[in-house]
Amino acid sequence: MCHSTHRIVDSARSETCCAECGLVLDDVAILSSPPPPPDPQTSAGSGRGIGPFVTPGGSKRLLGSTLSLTRDGQGRRLDWHRRYEFQHLKRVMQRQTSRVTDGGLERSPVRGEIQVAGEKMGLPPIVLTETEHVYRESKARGLFRGRSLPASVGACVYAACRRYSIPRTLGEVAAAVGAERAEVGRTFKVVQRGSGLSIPGVGAKSFLARYAQELALSPRVRSTVEAMLDEARDDPELSGLSPHGLVAALIYLAAESNGEHRSRAQVARVSSVTEVTLRSTSRLVQKVWAQDEQNGANDAPDTTS
Image (cartoon, rainbow, N blue to C red; front, side, top):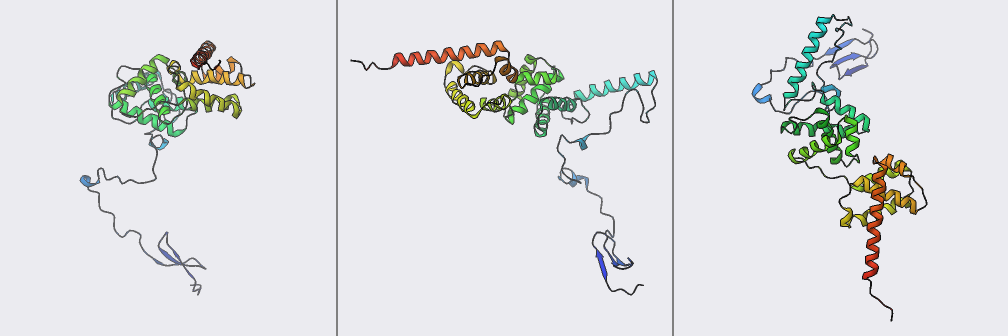
């Protein structure tokens, strides 16, 4: 129509159009016929899906929306008998979802508890995803029967932190989920024995890197503490101490010996131990090493004539 010879091929629309006036000269249908329906026998378990990969902890896996129990979907306030009815339905739903062992976490309060605990402790998303995996494996084996939800979530969070070598103490996890430390510890032992997952221990040097950064210690003090940790690892009398308590005591002693004074209150606050525990552990370490030095001096051969 415009007597132009310049044509453009649009691969997205499968059209050939004029570059001057935009007239469509030729078009080809993208799909000439509808695709055949999938076979239910062969499509199940094929692994095919639509859209990008979504992590288990992503928000796109949520089913529906959680509305308020006092207003409807349009924002109008509900009367008292409708509010009571929805509260009853919510209790029934929570009771039913808590009994399911193989179901997902979308409609259960577990995911919310895990997210809140992760925000309080500053955990990365991959640790929260691992927490959900540990919870599913433990729930499928019936390890949480008769135990509270905060203790179960705390045990899974602590197990995920240990699997990724994140230095977090059992007391910090218990405070984040709002449960007793002893209850979370008992539940973690059940998860560690019955889940079938490898849950290694967190090394003392992981706690050293975290505490040294928060206390702004120099590299000289860090190297001193690392040497003291290697010496304490070979001592049988110090093998039964908790890793974070031992690291806190060695940091306090190394800082004092290198002239970088850190008070017991500062070290105890960073390491999440009490000042009494820090004082007793420091005295025990000094006593054990003093005895070792004395025994080494007594066992040395006498070279005097």
